[in-house]
Length: 139
Image 1 (cartoon, rainbow, N blue to C red):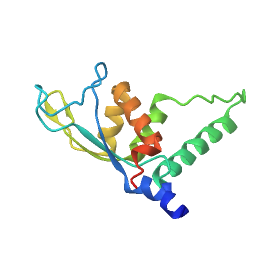
Image 2 (tube, one colour):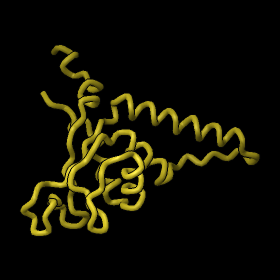
Image 3 (tube, rainbow, N blue to C red):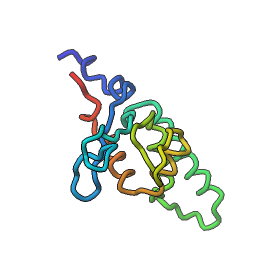
């Protein structure tokens, strides 16, 4: 087996498109209420991508710096929803069909952060997709 065919970093950098699922019935969400429109999608990089690794290191450095400044020296190892969202924003490269309050939302890092912070079910789907190497592996 040629190991270059299993270079997961290459696949993660190419990215993949996730179809957003309904948070309860797991049906693919579409741009039309009747389900006959185009799927709502989010374009993502994988957890083996440079963006994911760089943001992970940045968040870890931030936690260490906060720990070093702390008087009680207790470390909070939990990742906040905001930190989790930051990491996923770094992996998000675009989307289609995202509508909030009746308005089409153009992709931006700020809009992605807002979407993930306000919608844990979307953040959870994105997190699972980004972390699943099979989402990006195409052979």
